[in-house]
Structures are given as C-alpha cells and as structure tokens.
Image (tube, rainbow, N blue to C red; front, side, top):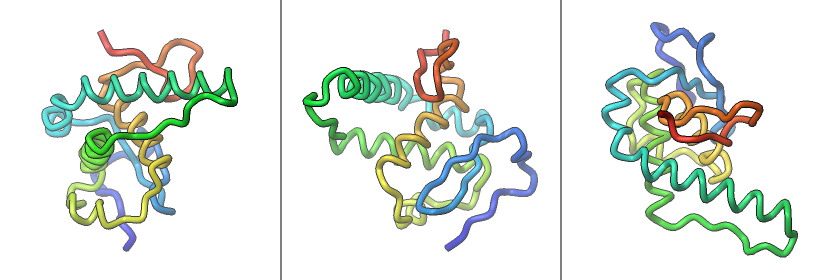
Length: 136
C-alpha cells in the first residue's frame, strides 16, 4: 500500500526517510505531534545516545559487543516514528504503520529524523544527522 503526504504540508521543508521501500516526508512537527511525543523524549534521547555509543565502540573495536534493541525500545521507536509521520500523513493509523515491512535500521534512521524535526534534539555542530544533543 502506498501512502501519499497531505497536500497541505510543504514537503519541500521536510526531511525524507525511506521506510519499507517507500519515501516518507517528515516535516517539523506541529504542537499536536509534540504533545504526543513529549513523554517519549527522555527515552528517545537515551536510546539515541546508546545507539551512538555502540556505533562508536564498533568503529573503535571490531570485536565490540553487538547492539540489540530491547522490546521496550522497539516500542518507543515505533511510537515515535508513527507520531512523526502523522504530521504529513494524518490518516496513517498505528495499525497500518505496524503492518508495513520496515527493517529496524530504517526505523532507527527515521527516529533520528523525527527527533530532530520535533526539536527534541539539535545536531551538534559539524556532526551528521542523528549525532545530536538534547535541546536546551
């Protein structure tokens, strides 16, 4: 099933992510999405910090322990990404989203974008997308 963004949303100002073989647009979140994602922000920041630390450890040591998401972290990722997508795709239900064949790696990339678009985190100067710090 192909989902199209709401024509009222300026996708030119959005970040694009690929999920399950489809391009999705994530604009800056509106207050409606901010209210829903706010309780997840501490968990999102902690998870992104853990992912970044694991990636740095893997770059430094090829024998570093593999990274694995816990069930509660997967739930946080799914919830946050779904909330972030509802700005441009207001009719995307959680059930329809969960039925999409999306690899975890793509969800993590989308989580970083949603966190940035919610302004919960800001990129550190000179860092790539996703290496971020909590917004002040």
